[in-house]
Image 1 (spheres, rainbow, N blue to C red):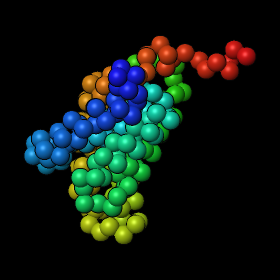
Image 2 (image 1 turned 60 degrees about the vertical axis):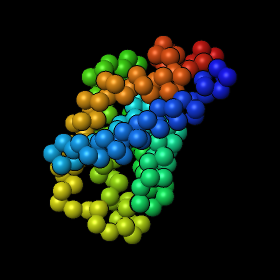
Image 3 (image 1 turned 90 degrees about the vertical axis):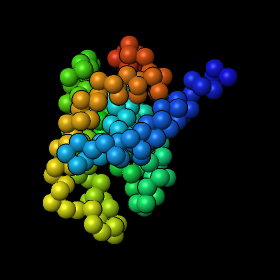
Image 4 (image 1 turned 180 degrees about the vertical axis):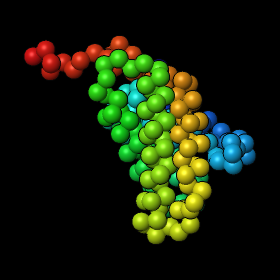
Length: 178
């Protein structure tokens, strides 16, 4: 039973289901400057920060697909953007050996803003109307700032959900020593 719970997919679901419940109930009602907070996006990007680009893409796809199941948008839209955001955060952040918390917050905020900008563009590209508006700038700023602040909680949660130890993440790959 312990081996089953220690699998990254099971842990992502254990983290994602309560986060999805919070996202669709509490944060849908409690808005900051009229903007709904995006904790599923923050967890996707935090997974990339905690576990690298492959884990970030995997977690982003899982969280995005979970979010797509409760939205009325086209299936896979959030999964595509969240997966790309998790991969991008992991790729950008893999260039640094030491990952200080302020850098996690900065990268999570910037990638959140970029993903919030890309999501309506991709939606418009596939034919969903009404997502591009003048309000988008305010949404990008609020989501980027709140997700940057949420990074201090999200990165340790993502590290646990991917079963990544910090010293394991910072160790160079084995092929360096061959």
